[in-house]
Length: 202
Ligand SMILES: N[C@@H](CCC(=O)N[C@@H](CS)C(=O)NCC(=O)O)C(=O)O
Image (cartoon, rainbow, N blue to C red; front, side):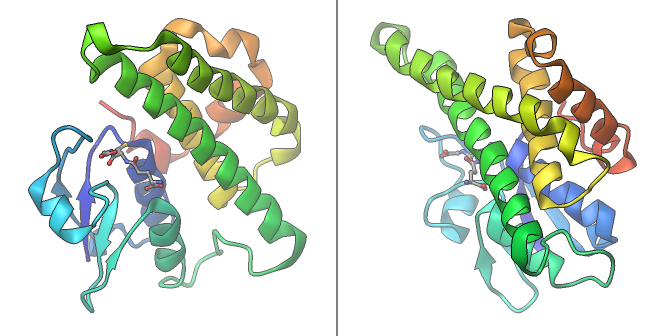
């Protein structure tokens, strides 16, 4: 399998953590492919019509995106504990947590694009503030549910931890850890795992 990849992408990190945790990592060739909305990577755009990473090319030639679909595909390829609970409340809890982590990331990434991709004279502070309001909303919710997460490792908790890792990486200046200490403690538990240590964004 081939993975269009950026070492700083938190969505790619979800895929890589799952691959490392499940023993699939050695089967994935990584193609470093940074891409942005204003500077599309041509290879990524050929493989994925919306030109984003992660994109996975499977051994039978399917082009899969986005991180949610890739993670669920990979979860079908191993015999260890599943990252996607099969059914019932456990499944909806994990998928809701995935949506919460991805929602934080979508807003944090858009706010970042506004600040570093958009020319200064065209920036719209109210729009970036609106995105950061979503980020703070998601952080408050993660802080609230953190005590219930325990030591569960599945697509929900991995996504939440990748989202918090992105906050450390791109938004350390806002000191989110002070305001959301239970979310921070949860993140640190996840970051102690070898799969997270091997994927710290550089
Ligand atoms: N919903 C997607 C989001 C992927 C995404 O936005 N990736 C960023 C890199 S962190 C990207 O490729 N941005 C390029 C663009 O938006 O054109 C997923 O879960 O994979």
